[in-house]
Amino acid sequence: MPVALQAFGLSDPAGRLYRELLRNPRATDAELTARLGLAPDQLRSARAELADLELLRPSWDDPSHLHPVVPELGLAALLSRREAELLSRRQEFERARAAFGQLRAEAESERHHHTRTEHLIGADAIRNRLAELGAGTSTQALVLSPGNGPTDRPTDAPDESDASDAPATGPLDESLSAELLGRGVELRTLLVDAVRRHPPTVAHARRLVGLGGQVRTAPALPLRLVVLDRETALLPLDPERADTATVLHGRGPVAALCALFDGLWHSAAPLCHPRGRDLNGMTAQHYALLRILQQGDTDVVAARKLGVSERTVRRLTAEALEVLGARSRFQAGARAAERGWLH
Image 1: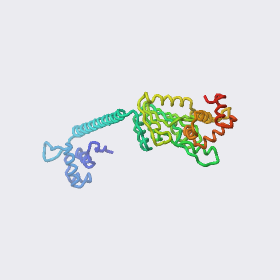
Image 2 (image 1 turned 180 degrees about the horizontal axis):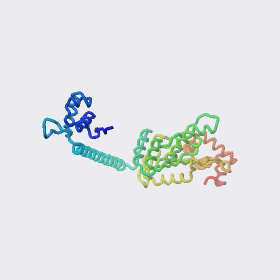
Image 3 (image 1 turned 60 degrees about the vertical axis):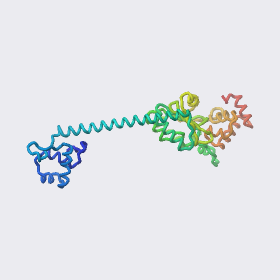
């Protein structure tokens, strides 16, 4: 099957006419319309197109007759012209990309010039800013996700109550996480142990692992946090509200948050490692709760750090008191300290 000549910028009728004239340069219009199946006006249009592209030129023998230019000259000239057009477009693209990079750098510099922190209000503002920051991330993303503001739900089954507490997503949505991992960015995500009883979150975490991410869980996490390339951090503006955030810039200011994450990460357990009760009859959640309560935090704060509801905090407290044989939280704290459980 003949190769079409559209790649040279020719229409199909013009390409077929050119081929036919190369084979039979003295063919009459009647012969050409019959062989090519073209109407007279289509034939005239195709011939004019070939003349404009300089694939037809007046014959030396009969200047009134247009003679086809051999491919070695005619098509070679068209090929050079197309190559020049592509090169010009490539140069335009490179200039556009350079202008994009310059404008982006200027905008980022302007933000940094005015303030080293940004305040974001609203879920859309946070999501959009994370997308912008994620697009510029090149090496690493660190994520702390204690939960999404758990609430009590009436149920008689403790395990079901725990499952309802667990967050379904983290600060980074799944599409952004996948995009980062697809570009080779290292993604470490820390969740609370409570998610292990929440199938949707476990499925989400396993998908991240399947894409190359790392996921671990800890008994309690102090706050929601995203650190990008160890020089930009997004953390809550108001710990009580999930729809507020502060963006902090600079390796110096962000270094403490990186140290916090690293400490939690090294003591956390990979998702594939089971979490259960130890020989004392306690879980990691119980120990974390005792440490939180020893600091004087309320049940509300303890619930946020554990990623569970206040109802689950009260249940865990009652279980810890029973294991310690204590009648009050104060007595439980004292006995836990005597046994060295609060270190």
